[in-house]
Picture (cartoon, rainbow, N blue to C red):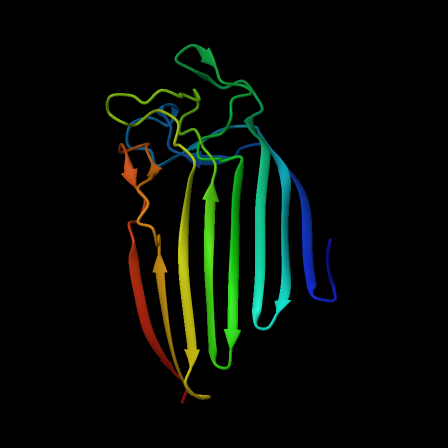
Length: 196
């Protein structure tokens, strides 16, 4: 469903994906050196939604989210003698969401956005406690902020800049297969665009 109503825009989607053989990130069952593995039958279902509102005077707010309450092994999945059927899939957060506030005046467009990822498992066992080597254990939820600006000098020339992870938040991006991998620290990108 998608639509608009005066200053409001919205869309919503319900989905159900019933895989016979879903390929997922490496797990212990994939063997040493594997980068992906066949999870067999899996079930993924949830909702996606987005909303935008023009506040007037150049201000706007936009939000979107994906909620996946079900992302599970849906068949017998025996690893080390234990059946993982019903466990949550690795790297499948229940919620990812974005919220941004924007301002536009003349040739200047700016926005400040927040990006949130809920906690997620990294293995078929759904291990919560961190292992000594960091390859197992839940990845905690995290939120980062991004700042963007774009200025059109004229019809041909524009300049832009982005600051990602504005607050320089330290967070874990992944664990398996190579141990803890940190998320990107604060970084800045600037550029110029010219249309001939």
